[in-house]
Length: 372
View: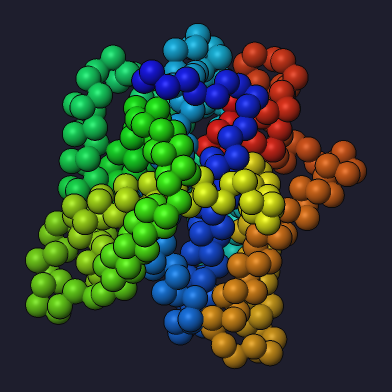
């Protein structure tokens, strides 16, 4: 990797834009599907969720691996502090916060024992929407352990894992198999990805033409359903619980995941300098704030809309829920920054650090993908 990555404390605008788009798509997915399940109907926002499915999480993990090269050879104490304990702190804290809302319901249905068992289960089975920051340290650790192996060998093995029909029921195992290839591509080919961004930013016309072609292919494969007779056979070659679309098929999902991630890089390279996109950059730079806290305003808004019944359209309810789920954590973060109370919710305190130093500005409010 001859390309020199940005050093600690540096922020890369197009990376923040990419993280901003990624977190918005993730929250859109949870908001839309949650409303649709509760309402028992599909809304007009659903096709957008399906369009983003092939590249939504692949892009998030690819971006997460981009900056690992600059810290992967750090002393173990520093590495564990920034790549493991950092995420463990936020995971434990927000599991307890989420459980404070969900635990009473579990206890009412199955008793206190069931609630305690569910809490213990969060130590090995990631809880709800927090699975990303549980799995990410596993990726960091595994990559450090295999960094001495040939890149092509790890890439081939990770790609094979992605196309294999692995569905054990364990979130850690299954998501590792499905997502690690994208993370490793971000780490091992970071120089090429940064080079692709520079190349695409300098060739607007051909890149836009390529993006249009990608959009058409991704839309067709993510929206088109498989013939009924092919579905049982396709299920054998996919870890998806229900294979309904061509984009779910083994091999196709890998190609679309990588192509969509590179398309996102190109898009963000084109818009990063635009003044109107700076709000998106801010969202990306603070994506961990939204990722950790969106569950509560999402759930409250969804419940209120369904109970009030003032909006009949499922798509519109999904849109409102999505907006509330994104804006709620932003407002909370700004209030915390203004008041100084509650900073521990989004900034790791000194006592939760192996290195013991005051958290740097680069880590404060930083995203899970580029933290530490």
